[in-house]
Amino acid sequence: MSESDIQTSPPRNSREGWREGLRYFWRPENLGEMLVWSTEAWKRSKIPLANDRAWDKNETCNRSMQWAGGDNEANYHKRGNKEMPIDSVWYDFNSFGYRTADEFDLSGLAPGIMFAGCSHTVGAGVPYDAAWPTLVTKHFAQAWNIPELRNYNLAVSGASTDYVAMIVHQAVDVLKPKAVFVLWPNTYRMMWFNDRINHFVTHIANKSGIEEHTCFLKLFTEEHAFANFVRNYNFVANKLALANVPFVCMASQAIRKDVLVDYAPISALAGDWGKRLDVARDGFHRGIKSLAVVADMMIAKAEDLGLGQLD
Figure 1 (cartoon, helix red, strand yellow):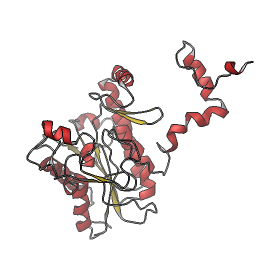
Figure 2 (cartoon, helix red, strand yellow; figure 1 turned 45 degrees about the vertical axis):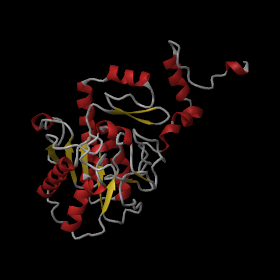
Figure 3 (tube, helix red, strand yellow; figure 1 turned 30 degrees about the vertical axis):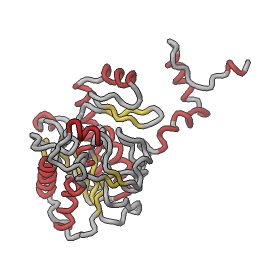
Figure 4 (cartoon, helix red, strand yellow; figure 1 turned 135 degrees about the vertical axis):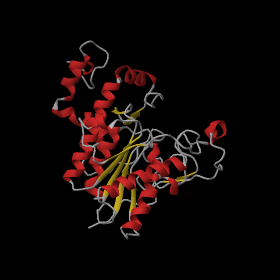
């Protein structure tokens, strides 16, 4: 057999390519290659570096910047909310690349609340102090008399419900938060892997390319979106119940409780976020007033579940 006859990578363009690809990847010597991309994604008890639609991992670690993602200077001049001064928002990222003023205590000893979601949980286009996770953390720091309570905000822009399930799986056992709050991203999104994590949204082509995004749109259905959300919701709810971690959530779209109740436990669901009251600096994301409503609804549901005071 000549050197050119040796199969060194899975075939991609032939009719039999998918079968040969399976045979290739399931050979023991090739499993490592298949799993190269997943050195961080879904790895148990391993908090991944932030991998955002707007940037690659490592790009924001320990950085401070005036603009991030769609909240950029060009968009501000084109469509931005001019009621917010151009210098009213600043982004500070911790060593893992997440927008929070607090570092992650990997020992799990420091008290903290964990948050997961998309750019609306990141606080895109609003000051850090106006982001709803910051408001919730400040409330419970006072209610629980824990001034050092940390804001473990693990949200990334463009995230899907897939991402929420993944980050809860990876981070909860490490951080051991006192509670987890989730603002579920739009269910019409999904996470997809090649040599990186990709956050697909229906109306914006991903960095992976137009062809991949077109394929995603061909596979997308509202039925699949709902089923995917139900699966991720149940995963998170069950994971946190087993870990004895209180769970509170809201939806970033209208989801009827009388429908969802047949598929998932809804005791943690505060409802959906309702009508947008204002916009952020970028003229697109929800603004300061709208996010304050999210924080108030999250707090009210948490207190309804008995989180007003810690035992």
